[in-house]
Image (cartoon, rainbow, N blue to C red):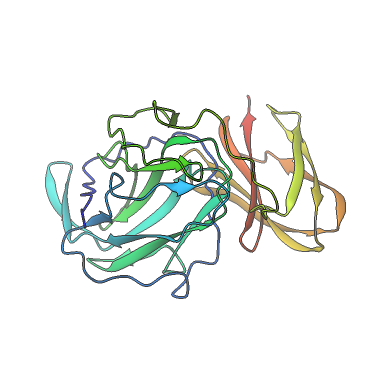
Length: 278
């Protein structure tokens, strides 16, 4: 099994905006670390990861091993812990969780990432975006891609042949020759989100915005706002009823920029991009 060496050498805080796609519910019941990795990184390499098939629920587990040391600012530093903050741009219908409740691993600790859901996405190759925080005595946050880790997921229709991974891909999504022209029609699948028809008006906004959505169930749900680095800048709860619901986003003291507003209920997540202006 191939290893992907994920070498953090920069604290450059870059992130290509997309839904964080976190399932929630991380913990030891999600997946089991193999304990077989001898080098830090992810396994299998994305060019060895089987394609996921539209209208199916893939059984995909990515193994992980944390670092002991890496070079930062020209000096060798010891990694006390590493946290996955965001893993995004998964094909539609999929989300991720790990074997650790806080998505954090200690020095050289083994872990795993489980991909859940039912694929309902255009055939092609998706470039994942991963943001991590490493504790080296002080926390540093970096985009894994900026640090040299590139990871891809391919989507095909049932009956299609495998298409080789293009490891030079820089765009979030590409469709090379060999992929089906259109997406297979999936019927009877259960969506990841229990929230429908979510809209945010106005957007962009400079003070407040009104969120409207349809809910399939009654209960207490979580509102969350994350920035472009995947860091949570607001978290609250709201009582939701079946049918029409509204909520207000208050800017408070958030600086102008691009954010992601999510409504979370268990493993169900619905996210919209929002822009705050001066």
